[in-house]
Length: 107
Image 1 (spheres, one colour):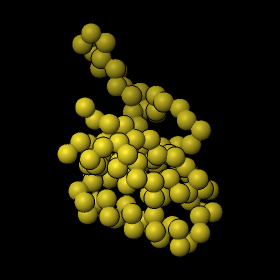
Image 2 (cartoon, rainbow, N blue to C red; image 1 turned 60 degrees about the horizontal axis):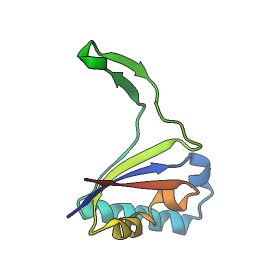
Image 3 (cartoon, one colour; image 1 turned 90 degrees about the horizontal axis):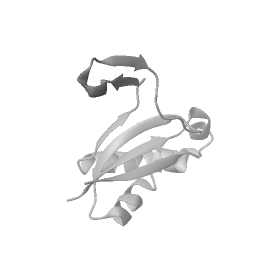
């Protein structure tokens, strides 16, 4: 089955303003995806690694990408197609808590 990388963006402010019942449903959707075999996690502090032409590793703390909202977490899910992947993540916390979820097909 095709795999998709999902990247959730969101902040505590958006999460906290979500009604309790919607929050509970969103966490149930996360639990459903994990039960289905999704690999899911909360994002920790990133580091950047460079090794131009294998000349030596250079490591810097901090993210390379920038976005209006911080990255909150990642998941690797399976779905029959992009439409099904979108349906699966449309109810997770970042999607319903005033954040956003990107879905990247893995080829």
